[in-house]
Length: 225
Image 1 (cartoon, rainbow, N blue to C red):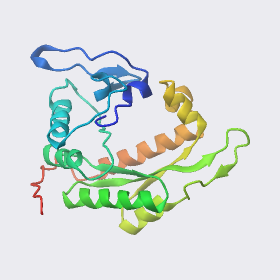
Image 2: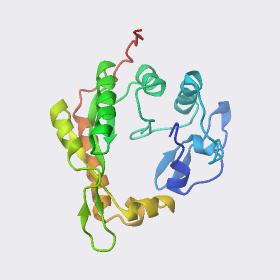
Image 3: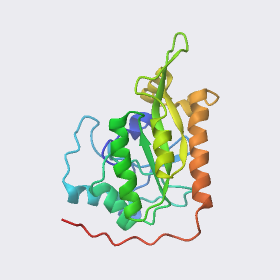
């Protein structure tokens, strides 16, 4: 979790990671996950005002200076856009793939399209697109309202020829459980939203497993003026 350090709040964690031998940091643990976030290193109210070199340094430290140990998968929550953070990841790490997350409306899909094109340009496989806030579910009557439209990300995935991984509705339960530090997949694993999250994870994992074996070499990135 780089720019927006929300992992401590989302997972109900506090304090700082312990420093191990060799100046390595021991990742925090919660719900069977190993976690590292800038939120453990700076105060929650401190803004992350970083220039490019500072972003690059932070990403490098989180990847190389954390004692991750053996992992099934390492998920990096990236900031929106196509800037230094994304380019650094593409250049320094043999990524298994990128997941593009977008809300359904056209304005958001423009940025999602740019991100997808950037990852394809630097030879990072795009595992698929997720439609977030796909529909609003009323907590009182269960009625659904397409506040941001609906299906835009699915249409975009078909247009661009990448998998559509699934959609996540906008619900009060997701907001409440996230703020309480007990994600809905933990606090209510049988809910429809939890099933949607697990379905997205299963589909993304299937895309990773179906890819050709072997690590992807880091591409040489040339900045064109």
